[in-house]
Amino acid sequence: MSETFDVVIIGTGQAGPGLAGRCNKEGLKTALIERSLLGGTCVNDGCTPTKALIASARAVHIARRGDDYGFSPGGEVRVDMKRVKARKDDVVRQSSEGLEKWLHGMENVTVIHGHARFTGPHSVAVNGREPSAERIFINAGCRAAIPDMPGLSDVPYLTSSSMMEVDFLPEHLIIVGGSYIGLEFAQMYRRFGSRVTVCERSARLIGREDEDVSDMVREILESEGVEVRASAECFEVERRGTRVAVKLACREGAPEVEGSHLLLAVGRRPNTDDLGLEAADIATDERGYVKVDDQLRTNAEGIWALGDVNGRGAFTHTAYNDYEIVAANLFDGDSRKVTDRIPVYALFIDPPLGRVGMTDAQVRASGRPVLVAKMPMKRVGRAREASETKGFMKVVVDKETQRILGAALLGMSGDEAVHSILDVMYADKPYTLIRRAVHIHPTVSELIPTLLEGLKPPVAQ
Image 1 (cartoon, rainbow, N blue to C red):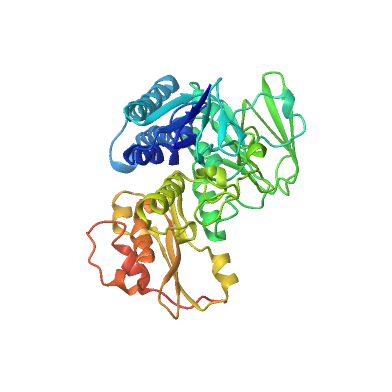
Image 2: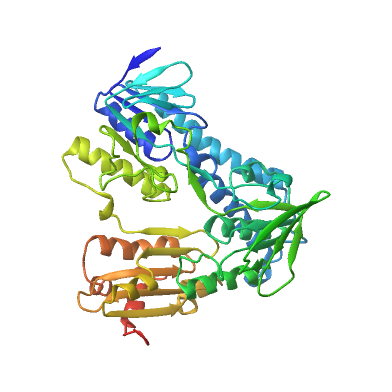
């Protein structure tokens, strides 16, 4: 059945619903297509459920630390994973039901469930329907990547999505991949009570981060009992009855690790291989991400790609910003572009890492003269008062322009405090603006001006 719309949106991840809402406001007849769950990864498999689980794990951790705060939990802290999962599911349900009600309440938006495939430059097919439009927006997202590991086809494994259905405590969880997703699950399940081993091919965890950040993150995790096997130059898995063994070739440690469950956390891949992009002659890069320009337009006229599927950002906040860029250009006469965006993200272990701007390696590669400052969290009064003194704060400033180039806040409230730096960077103001600000005491942010007082040239530039 052929149907004509003004707009077709493929996918209801973070960019899709916002764009549908704006199109509805503009009076545009819009088809919003979703082949799985409304809300995409963030609501169902990513941000919302994992942060709910992290909150439960932190509550367990604090209860076990009762003596540090002057109380006793009154015996062993027991974790009921079925109740933990039920709480997580309830949090997700609130988000998904609210989104569903909002979308179905839009007068000009038709929600279509099913798998969409392009049949031409401006048309798709989904469950016997053939919506077409002059404007099509791809918001299909990504999924967990499955590595090509010898023996994997014979071994049961979990991904970040299937972990959401786990309602039991793995006796020994082996995690292949020492980056953001893997590390959040590592700390979470260690706090729930599992033995956890992280296996990472690189020499250090979260290799894109500065070396001191990677080292401190490893120290934090190992202090809680997470085992780390780095420099694993080859992986091979083997099923041993009800257990699984991961064979490693590490510089140190045993040649293999055996556990009860295996979690693969080696990255994500775009959901573009089954969209029929060739029918619309839409170009992708060597990894399968849809190629877009600075305003998120593909090479095909009238087709845009938003969110994770375009490879220009891997976060919920960048996906939503993609929607804002498209809406501004199409409806507001406001020329916005992706390169206006300052990189900012967090690693939600405890304590969290808030990262903004350039890394140390990027600053060195730029060749510009800089000033740097670093402060341990034990100097932050709020952190001492909470007995949360692990980590540090550091910032890099352009010596000539006095603009902040980047910062890493690894410590209590680092994921929140980093925004005070981000906002000054967006305002394109010198770092001295923060130094003159009067912050609330006692907070973590109040020590950022003090941190900036310690700026000096790096030891080796």
